[in-house]
Image (cartoon, rainbow, N blue to C red; front, side, top):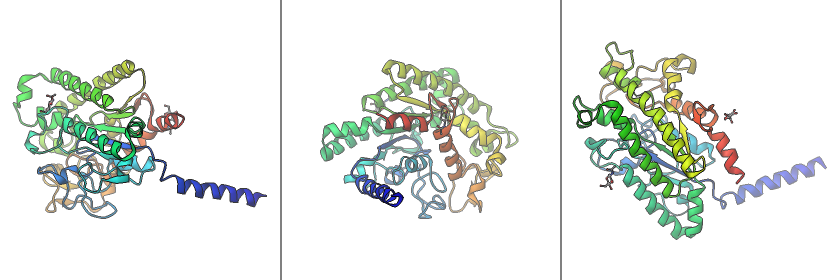
Length: 365
Ligand SMILES: *[C@@H]1O[C@H](CO)[C@@H](O)[C@H](O)[C@H]1NC(C)=O
Ligand SMILES: *[C@@H]1O[C@H](CO)[C@@H](O)[C@H](O)[C@H]1NC(C)=O
C-alpha cells in the first residue's frame, strides 16, 4: 500500500517533469544598468563592457560574460529561484530565438541612466527608451510564435526587474565638477526631476504590459570603493554628497511607486530598498563573512578603487570575502545576499512585500 502510494507520487513527479517544459515557467524581464546587465554591451561599440578577464572568473565557465561581477549577478540569482535555468539571455544575443524567448529577456545595458544624457561618454549603449522599444519588438516576435493572446498573457504574468538611477548621479551629476546638470539644478531639485522622469518610464513599462515590477532604489552610492578612493579624505568615510543623493532619491522613489500603485489599483510596483540591503554588509562586513567593504577585489590605487578592473589590476585570491568585486559593483556573494533579502526581507526592505510573498500570491491566480 505504502509502496503503491509512493509509486503514484513518483509517477506524478515524473509526469510533471515531462509536462513542465510545455507549460511556460513564469517569464522574467530585466531592464536597467550594469548592476543587472548580463551581456548586451558585448554586442555594442562602447567602453562600458565587462567581456574580458578577470570578469567572470568565478562564473561556471570561468570566462567573462559581460556581467559586471566575478560570477553571477542579481538577475541570475532571481532567475534560478524562479525555476528558470538561470538569467534570461541578453536581448541582443543571437541565441535568444524560438522557445528561449518564452522564458524572458534581459534588456539592461551598462552605463545607462534614467536620463538620456546619462552615460554619454559610453556612446553606444541601450538607453531606457531603446530598452523599451526592444521590449516592444520582443513582444511582436513572441506574438508571431505563440499568438498575440498568449504573448500578452506571458508578459502580464511575468516578473520584471528594473535597476536604474545610480548612473544619473555617478555618471552625470557628479561625473565632473561643474557638470551641466549640476549647474542647472541644485541636488534636491535634480532628484525631483530625475524621479519625475523615472515615473514616466514606469508608466511606459505598465503600458507595455508589465504587471509585477521589482524596482530597486540606488545602493549606498557614496560608499563604493571608487568613491572612497576619489572623494573620501581618509579612504574610509563614505562620500557625503553621494550619500545625500541616495538619501533623497530612495524615499521619493518609494513615494512614486505607491502613487502609481494606487492609480493602477494594484501592487504592480514593488520597491526594493537596495540601500538598506547593501548598507547591512557595507557597515558590518564581518557579520556577512566579508573581510572588507572598502577595498575592491579587482582594481588599482587606493581602495583598488581607481580606473577599471582589467587583467593588469590587483586581484584578490578569494572573491567571496570581498563585498565589492570592482570599484563600483558588488561581488557575486554580495549579490546573493541582496537577492536573499529580496525574497525574505521585511517591509522596510521590500515594500509592500517580499518576493516570496509575491510568488505565493501570484501562484494562486
Ligand atoms: C530620450 O530620447 C528619445 C529618443 O531621442 C526620446 O524619444 C525621449 O523622449 C527622450 N527622453 C527624454 C526624457 O528626454
Ligand atoms: C516575507 O514577508 C512576510 C511579510 O512581511 C514575512 O512574514 C515573511 O517572513 C517574509 N519571508 C518569507 C520567506 O516569506
